[in-house]
Image (cartoon, rainbow, N blue to C red; front, side, top):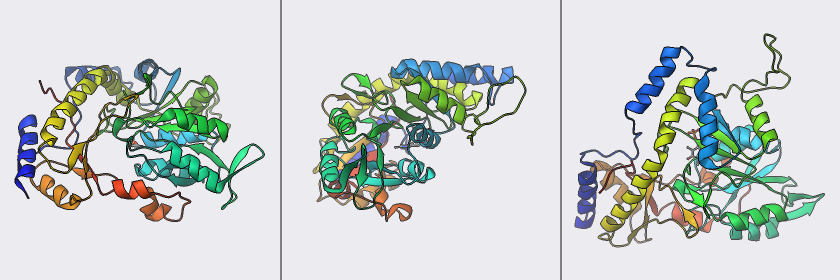
Length: 384
Ligand SMILES: *Cc1c(COP(=O)(O)O)cnc(C)c1O
């Protein structure tokens, strides 16, 4: 490997003062121990207890939405977000091909079909202009619904995903949703603390999903949340994720097939402590991005991905953008062998076996980006 990359790897190890630097680790202190200990001492560690209500209330405040419903993980949050948004079996749902598999899986749980759209190089997320072109190609309005002329299926919703904590260009997407009667459901799993035009991501869609998996900007161990400004959808999400039980002091009556997706109290206790630190984590991640930008300057043919205009990103995962002359796999081999954990972006959904026959648009940018993006260590860090 050339000298530039050896220097780069060494600088990262120096920055973190470690011989092996993981991609992303959770950060805890006494506060998490205190909250979780309190939860265990109370005996209420499972499906009842005060931390779930508190976490939901604080999450809604933090994200500026009316309601939050805490669930077991981000995938479950997406599943229920899509369900309450009205996605039905045999519908199609637009989404980027360049996303984590959960986005496509959640649509499939409802016997609906993901329909893959290209992404923008500026945001790394769904490209509203490519989507519009594609709709003009394959879509037709029938009885107030957008129908895919090639499959005859209704296209019900659009799921943008805010890649690595950087918001997609939401205004033109919202305009398309209005024009073509599509429901907007945001996959905000990576974008807690990220803003589009000063409004928190996840607050634009009819419903949105967050994730608190161990590698996300904050964690509850495993966890997720559904966000919405609509009380009716929030109430339905709460009810359907808690076994669809009809409220009663002692009768077990369930009047619909429900899910056991409720976040346990002990996870919510961890979440209440972590949420208080998200502003600090974001500050540190943004400083880390500045630091990396300087270090990356010594690499030829490489830049650090920066937040698009009109957005403020949480910089959840720091991202190297290689020009097409660079050999991604050699770089990944070298960094990982040097103790600097690094990963490529996901394999695009249209290339995965379960989704290879799903409808899709032209995916030129997706195919380019899949070989040119590398995530580097991103654990929040005091750099100054
Ligand atoms: C993490 C993630 C999810 C799912 O979250 P889990 O909590 O792991 O189920 C969904 N979508 C995206 C884009 C993610 O990064």
